[in-house]
Structure formats: C-alpha cells, structure tokens
Length: 557
Image (cartoon, rainbow, N blue to C red; front, side):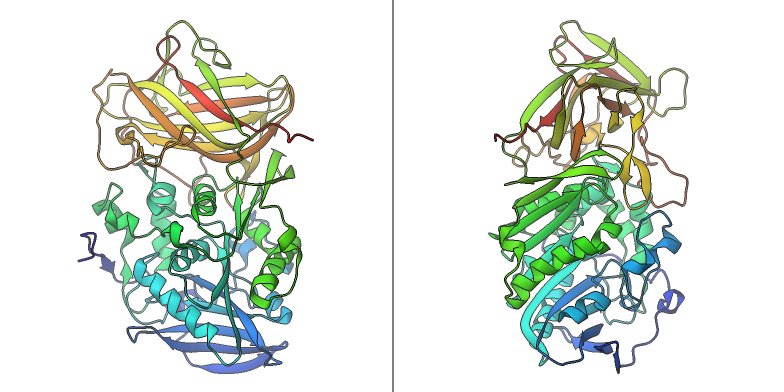
C-alpha cells in the first residue's frame, strides 16, 4: 500500500518487445561515424534491478557531458515519423538513423562533444522489474541513471535532460529530486498533471489517446502498470494522481522550457504550468505555434538547444545569457506569426477583458447585456434544432490575445442531471472565413484554444484558482437537478493569437468534441458522455455569462 492509500495495478505486457523491433540484451561495442556506441549496457538501480541503456559518445574519448532521453518507447527504435504520421512535418533529413523516438539525436549531439544516453525504463522492453509510469519509483531510477552517467570515466561530470512528451514529463519528476550531477534540463512539451491534462479534461474521461498509450508503453517481458484499470478506480483527483506529478517548488536546475499553443488537450497547459511553478532562478520559456516534433528537430531550434547546453554543461559562453526570459509567438494563421520578447509568464501587463454573451444575436459584447436571455442546443448533437451555441466579436483595431482565457457560463441541463461541455475559441478572417492553425502533431485545421467541463466537477480549488484561470478540485461529484441553473467557470487552455481590425473571435459551446477526426487517427476523443436532452445557456441581466480574454498591449517604446 502506498502512503496515499492506493496500490498499483499491474497487468501482463500488451505486446512482446520483438513485435516492435526489440531484441534480447547483449552488450556490444562498436565505433561508427566518430562515435563509440555501447548498446545494452546494464545499469543497476538502488534496489538491484538492472535496466538497459544505449550510450553514444565521442570516439576521441575526451570528457563529455551527457544528454539523457528517458522514456518507454524503446531505446533501439529509429522512427520514420512520416510513415506513421505523414503530416507531422518531420523530414527524413532532420534525423540520423541513430535517433530514438522524441529524443535528442546522437547524429547531431555526439559530433558536438556530447554523450547521448537512451534508456529502456524499468519493466519496459527487456529491462527488469515492473513498469510504473511517471511514478516516484521511476523518478528514483532516473536519478540513479543520472548519477551513473555523471560518474563514468568518459564523463565531464555534468548531465542534461532533453526530449519531447513523456521525455519531458519524466524530466519534471527527476528534477524535483535534484540529483547532484544534473546540470540542466530542456523540457520540450510535456504534461505535468496527468489527470487534468490527459486522462480527464475538465472531468470528462478521454477515451482515445489515454487508452492508446498503454499499447505504446507496454512492451515488456515482465509486468506493466495497468493505467486503464487505475483510471477507473480513481475517477477523482486523489493521492494516486498526485503521485504522478512533480513537486515543482523543489526544481532548481537551469531550465530551457519549450511549449506550443498547438497542443491543446495534451501538452500546452502542462508545459506552461511547469515553467511557471519551477523554482529555478535560471529559466527561459519559448512558446511557438507549430507542430511539436518538427519544431524540436528543426536546425535553428537544435542550435538554440546547443547554446543552452553548451553554457550549462560545458561552461562555454553562449548567447543564452542574452536571451529574453520569455519568447512567445503571436500567431496570425497556420505557420504565420511573429515572436515577442517578454520578461515573464503570464505577461504582467495583460488587460483581462470581459466579453458578455448575447444569446439573442449570437455575439459577444463589451458591455453587459441588460435583459435576461436563454439559448439551448441538443446535448449530443443528434436531435433537431441547434447543435451548438456560438458567439462572435469583430475587433475594431489590431489586438493580441496572449495568455489564459476563462469562460463563465450560467447553464442548466434539460432532461439530465449533468452536462459535458466542450468549448473552442476560433479565429475568423475579415470575410468571415475560419482561420486554421496547426494542431497536435499532424493537423492543419486547429483552433485558437480549447476548454472542457463536466458540470458535476464544477467545484473549484480555491487555493489554486485565479481570476483568469479556474482550477477544478475534482474531489467529488455535484449532480444538478434537471432545469436548475448553476454557474460554471471553464478553464480555456493558454493561447497566443493576433487579430487584425475586422477579424473575428468566435466562441463555440457544444456537447461533443468540437474538433473530430476519423479513427484510428491519433487525437483526443470524449465518447463516454453523461449528456442527454438539451443544454440551456442563460445570459444577460443577473446571468453574467462572459468570456474573459487576455489582451496584451504593445510595450511602451
């Protein structure tokens, strides 16, 4: 029994390692392309369990700092991204054949004088023990590998961490333990709160990507954590879910954090929360509007990673000391935008502005609407009549919205005792045509931002919530009597978008996912719904339903 009163659930592996190119570990050492490559090096953890790693290091044997890629995807696996995700933007020439999935590429880093270590974490592939994911036990293993790497004869004593997604989420966990040889981290788009950011958006179960992950993580010869059984056993945020999050207040290592506006429903929120909460005195944030894998491997962005690691792992003076603390892209449309230099996140000069819902005209108003109004839509988008509510605002001058939005709604279920509510913020051009953005890793038609709420989870965590970012407590279920009107505050994930005069912001509210893609395309889906009947939105008069937007004025010259 864990201290929080829960037990891990384990299951047989969801596939054999050889089905995905794995082979039983046999130590071998080769020299290729100026690299010493040691494969299947056995490293003993503090409890004696052995896990297997691959080490790529300079053939000149000069002391080198290490970069570690820590994840469950298989250290052996070079991934042809375009074969699996044809629209992800990762071109073949961006990687060498030595690169593992979402990890730093030895083909680039070793010639620069770094060692690269790829790990098969405990209980995955052929590493011993039972696999747990983003757990305290896994963080201790990561700590042990960092200390192993920092004390090898070929090491200069400094270790850095890099990689995307799981390889970022695991960085937060181990950095909170402050291993002595850890000198710098590069979290590149990864969640920090598994419950709120992956498994249950707004309290609504995610039914596609979360169930997909065990198949990707579960190659093993032992046992793996049964994430789906655990999610069913823990429908609210409790000690189990808390155990999968880092204590950010203890993270003090220098950090170069990269997020995107485009990972709505996966990494956007968590990466920004991580940057905001870590205690590191030397930390930088970059937020882009592109597809994450391609951005990680693009030459210019790898060069920035190199500037960061050269300074902190090699002691070489670089431009990192002149970087602005925060760089944010203000997007205009797909792959078009400009980078802004800022001093902090969220931006301190933000003017949070209320836009009031006018249910009669389907518009957003800058002044409160005096008369009470209501509008209803079919909760499952199956019946007659409207299937969504939408509200538009045209800007009369150039406006940049960068930061958190919040939607305050007064709503009632008609014919049910709960509501699943899906929110999208969209941009329309001056002709009223939808402006698309990059979305997730592979879509070209994404939103400005998204939000979700299961109304029975509407209770706020008052200790964490702010005026612009409501944080749900997720501690209990508060059902609603059919027809009863309740106030709801919906967190809309951060975004950064520029609107020219005449362009429009659109708010969409409906009872199913706003962005839907055919299966088996990898995307968020929320098909386990409580929705029945109709949803009724109340606005005007005593019902101050409004959208709070983050207007960022130009800096004073």
